[in-house]
Length: 241
Image 1 (cartoon, rainbow, N blue to C red):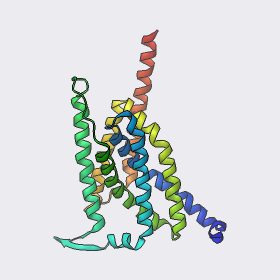
Image 2 (image 1 turned 120 degrees about the vertical axis):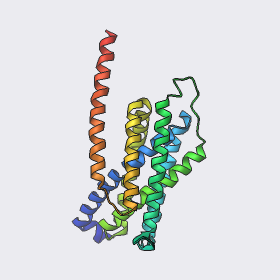
Image 3 (image 1 turned 90 degrees about the horizontal axis):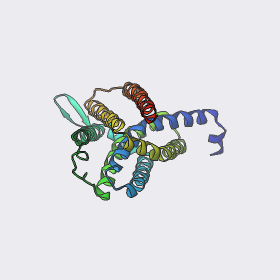
């Protein structure tokens, strides 16, 4: 253990892996925030905490069973010359779920049930937690595979995952509150989830889309939206005078 602490390569691996885990967890934070927004206000923070706790537990369990994770990449059967693995099935299922969920949420937001006088449907706490748990498994899979590929030391992997999850836990509250306050930001987040869903399905069928492209697209859109929000705030301030 002391040999690991004294090795600068281990520290470099820890920092790099922690940064990657945080980046890979962005879509998880967005999904958890949107799902938690379906609950009453007093339950949203608790749902986010439980969701991230489940994400941490899932990642640690997968890290503890590295041999099983490695088997997921092995072909299970072949369809028209395409070797299908357990990882492929999980990614395709998770991607389709994100596409369906994102589309339904966008439909609900665009239809504007609140403005029409119809009370929004409140989801049950259990159903929200179950959905968060399912997507945690999908998001955890790529995260753990990345960790296994980046480091040979299990303690380093666990430390990186725990640190990244602590950062996500701190950020989930402000992100969730911000998304809830701004409908346009929520639409942007839902669009991002659709992009992630497409990427997961594509990855599952053997066509890898680098996440850097997705993050650049959402970062650019977020920049444009932040400028819109700043302009709106200035207009409101001017109108107040």
